[in-house]
Amino acid sequence: MLHLFAADTMDQEELMAERMLSGRSVVFDRHNLVSAMVYQAEVHSEQEVRRVNPRSMYLRPDLFVLLDVHPKQAAERLEARKKQQTDGKYKTLDLDVIARRCNQYRSAFAELELDGWARESMMVSVEKKTPDIIALEIIETMEELAERV
Image 1 (cartoon, rainbow, N blue to C red):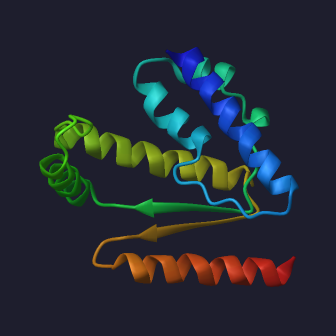
Image 2: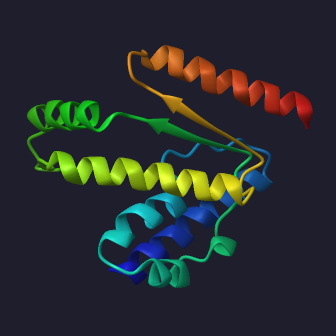
């Protein structure tokens, strides 16, 4: 499964690279590297995840944004989505699992931020914010970044 995820990642990275080289902006939710660091690490060792998903195979984003959600709020959102879906896509997760994943995302973000992986990074707490406010914060940061280029 680890290798299938890595192969899928490569396909997505190639598509993003093509679009970026053609001058188009690319917005990607949950960059593959970060998701790999979080989800694959639940089953495989960190060393194995890094070996199969070397950072060098990933495009470096200009802006890396982490939308930080409190675990309880994430659980409530997942439960609401589960009630709306009939295809079984959303499963009930234990609050401890959600909290662990939230912490893993924060750790991955901090590690990549320290490495200077992206030109700019920001963590946005979504608690008590509407999607419009969150989008405006991200757009403002993108505009500031574009002015510096």
